[in-house]
Amino acid sequence: MKSLEELKQLRESLQKDMLARNSAGKARIVIGMGTCGIAAGAREILQAVLQEVKTRGLDVIVSQTGCIGMCEKEPLLDVQLPGKDRITYGNVKKEDVSRIIVEHLINGNIVEDLVVARLEEGGE
Amino acid sequence: MRELSLHILDIVQNSISATASLINIYINENLEGDLLTIKIRDNGRGIPEEQLLHITDPFYTTRTTREVGLGLSLFRQTARRSGGGLEIKSQIGAGTEVTAFFAHSHIDRPPMGDIKGTLLTLIALNPDLDFTYQHLYRDREFFLDTRVIKEELEGIEINQQAVLDWLGEFIKKGLEDLYGGEG
Image (cartoon, rainbow over all chains, first blue to last red; front, side):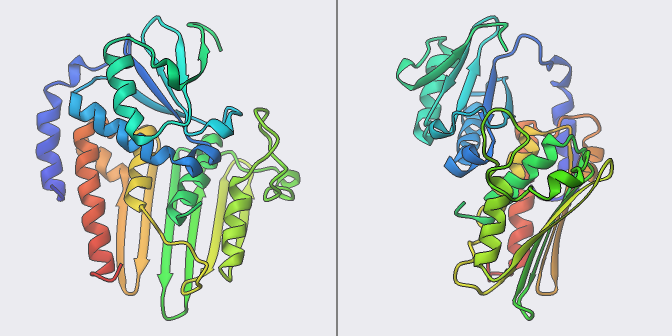
């Protein structure tokens, strides 16, 4: 699928489920995209996240943040389920992504051995 | 950074922080002149003159989360050790332009790397921003403008996975055609 004509066909198929999409009440995945995160492999972690989200057909928000001062623990990946604490996973490897998504995002169980920080729901 | 595409991803983060809405990425691989140029231009808030003086100092940053600012200094270091250099132009309220030059054939010049991954990362994480990507190689050109893609999508989000898949194939094919089997 490479031409704009094919993109139009894709648009028509996507319009059908467009109305059902909004960001309220969705789980969120945040990836650290500071220089430290990028140098440590954040781009590859994002690609693994997008692949896993696609494979499992998940409806989540994937976004980015800058350097939060934990450079030595990059790549950092945060997961926040609606109404729950924001959990920061550190030194994340591509092979950890599937585990974090299945255990935390889908089953609601925090992957304790990869946690480097947590922020209470409603905290800054 | 092991790839120039990672530097590009990193420098664009500065444009995003500067609240740019349009970011132009330009790459020119001039083999005859043995010159590689990478230019990143944005329409963000611009950099005050007094900050421009220190902008490539690794121990200077305007952020408060840590005391170093490595992105531009690393990019400059990479350019310099590849027989080139780095220039920054900025105008308050109009935007900033970062240009890096490299001797294309220099043994210390990092490879371009995963340009497709960098572009998809930027688009996936910043669907509200617009990007243009212009890449020249010999007499060929690959050009991508997310504004055109969005127009075709008529309100469908550009970072929906199916659209990202299409974009990935579009970029892959475009770069293959650009390099004509040489890249």
